[in-house]
Length: 182
Image 1 (cartoon, rainbow, N blue to C red):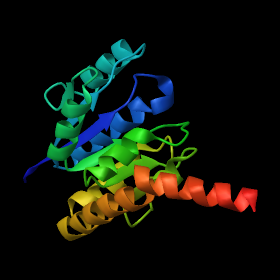
Image 2: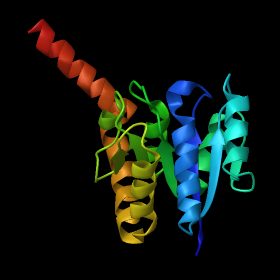
Image 3: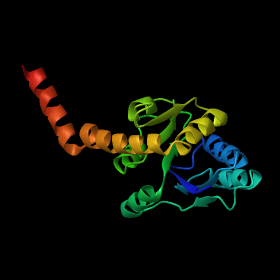
Image 4: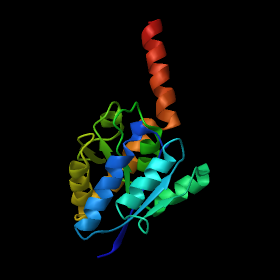
């Protein structure tokens, strides 16, 4: 089995659902997948995350890199196979957009604004928040289907460029302004 690189960039806060992401990685490893999980971030839950990594026997599979510069972040995203975010609460998330702009399919929980960040089944997959088994199943669905993964990679990049670029933002604002001023 080839090694798969999964990536997340987020603060170490309870709201990001770290225990579910780590449990999902442990489940995938149990199922025979060779997973490397790279995490960029820091915060008040670092000790709890380190404890969970240890408890799940993932020391040799999970790499914590602290906060990264924008250039380092882009490089890490470009070398990853998937972006994951297990948030239990979330607004609209910029890191998911950055990942898609780098051509990364995203596997995200259905919390808050995340269903607007990705098109479920097209640019990534949604799973039930607080459900590590559902998360692992969604990740596995992509890892076991390279054609689907490649399709989602292209769709993610195209959607990020079309829908969330500065140009499209300016055009949307101008249209709204014209509409409101008659």
